[in-house]
Length: 390
Image 1 (cartoon, rainbow, N blue to C red):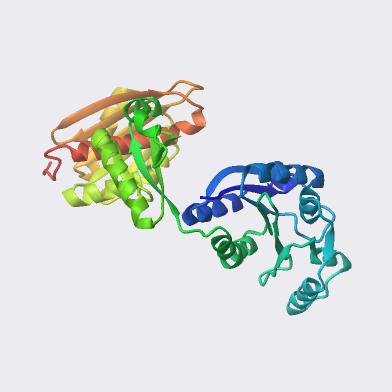
Image 2 (image 1 turned 120 degrees about the vertical axis):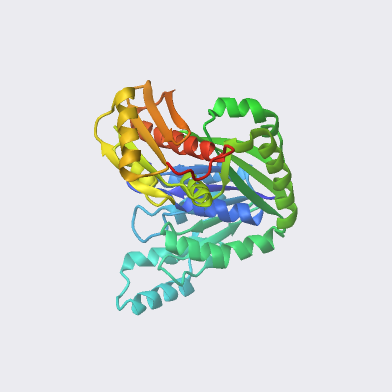
C-alpha cells in the first residue's frame, strides 16, 4: 500500500485562529482507499518552510497532499513553494486564467490582476480545474512521488478530492486494498488497567489495536488492512470477539453508540423509570439523560452535598416523582484531586459509592457523569433488574 503525508498550510492554523478540519477529512478518505497516512504537518505562510516540508515529506512518502495557500494574495505562497521543492519554475497557463475569469463572471464580478497569480502552476504540473471556487489545484509528479496541492477552503478541497484526486490516486497507484476501522467504547476501567488486559493485542501489526482515553471512558480502535472490505471486516471481527471475551460488559458499545443511547435501550427494555439529583455538576448529568427512556426529570443543586444529605434528597426525589430508581451525584472538584459521591436508590435497597480521580477540575463533570451513567448501565445488566412496583 502506498504511504502519504498531509501538509496543511496557513499561519492562521499555527495561531489557533481556525481549526484544521481538512486533515481529518483527507485522513478518513485515504484510510478508506487503502493508503497509509504516516504524518500530518502544519506550516505557516512561508515559501521556504513549505518547500522544506515538502522535500522532507517526499523522502518519506509516496503521496504528499497540501491544503491552503492557493489564493491570489501575497501571503498565498504554495505554488512557488512547491515549484521550489521540486526544482522547477512556475509557468503561466492561459486556460486556467480563462477559467478563473469565467468563474468571476458567474459571480457578476471582474477578477483583479492579483487573481492572475492563480493561473501559475509548477512547470509540468497537471492542473485541476476548480468548478466550485477560483483557486485551481495541481498535481506534480516526481521520481520520488507525487505532490497534490488543494485549496484550503473545506468545501472546495472536499469536492476536488472526491472528484479529481481520489480517482487519480486509484489509477496512479492501482489502489484495490482498503483500511477499515472499528471503535469499541469502554467505561469504568482506567486506561492503564485496560492496557494490562489487552497489551498483547496492541502489539499486533495487522489488525492494529490502539487506546484513546476520555474522561471516564476509554476507546479501543481496531484497524485492519486487506484487499477487500469483506476481508478487513473479518479480521476486525476476530479481534473484536477476543476483546469482548476478555472485557465483557466493560465494553458498552461501538462506533457511534453512546452511553446515553445504550442506557435508554436498557431502561426501555426493562420498563423502568428513574430520576436524577445532581449537585455541583452544572447541569451536565441532567442534560445527558434528558432523552433517555424512562427519565422522569430531576433536580439540580449548585453546590455539592455531603453524602448523608445527598442520600436523603435522592430518596425524596424518588418518592416525589414516583420513579422506580433514583440516582444522586455530588461532585467536589480540586486541582488533581476530584471526588464524587453517588447514591443509587432502588426497590431492592440503596447503594452509596465514592469515586476519586485526578485531572483538571474542568474535566471533572464529564468524568463524574460518565461514571454515573456507567453505574446505571452495569446495574441494569444485573440479574433481576426489571420493573418492580415500589
